[in-house]
Amino acid sequence: MSEARSWIDFDHRQLSIREQCRLLGLHRNNVYYEPVPESGENLRLMRLMDEEHLKRPHRGSRQMVDFFEDQGMTVNRKRIQRLMRKMGIEGISPKRRTTLRMEGHQVFPYLLRGLEINRPNHVWCCDITYIPMRLGFLYLVAVMDWYSRYVLSWRLSNSMDVDFCMDALENAFSSFGRPEIFNTDQGSQFTSREFTGALKSQDVAISMGVIVESCVLE
Image (cartoon, rainbow, N blue to C red; front, top):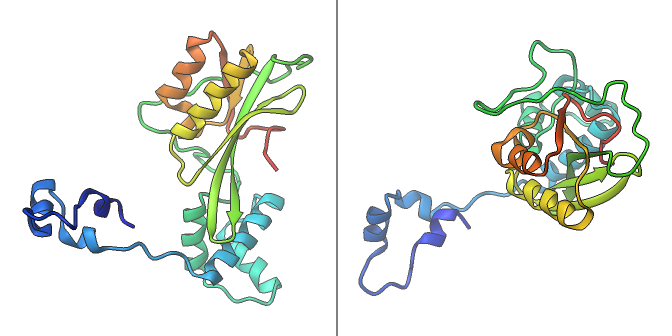
């Protein structure tokens, strides 16, 4: 069901749907629009691409075409590009700008180079991964103690907003205290004012790298 439909009272006795749309500033097409789910074939392609991306994250859309051809499947590159965008994955390779930062978000230096991590609560890290489901997919965020590899907190979401990351972070703080250093990549969720503000309020040193090495969720 579209979000616009949830704002309309279809059984209202005094206001017609047309009038409710006018008052809410909605176009009636938005009220009647039903999102079309991905086909079973596309979901299967997305699952295969996700598995291949976890094994060989350097593969871009062209190499995904080659991958499917090796499996005896012919898939149009534009189709692969659209599905990869929907999944939020791309090939990891040297680029002029490896990370696109959200305007207004501060990026912090990487603090772990040459650092010996030798005790719990010395360094925590956080990462987001994609989980294929039978009828779609979800995003999983987890907060992990780098030394023990213990997952301190995790949350699932069907969108990549900051809220589920904040829930996981706050739960980790309430259950396990705080680390000395918190390391993430430069994703917009982790560079947001909400996320970095929560770390600063706990006097946690913030570390950011382009890729969270040794903290990838599998």
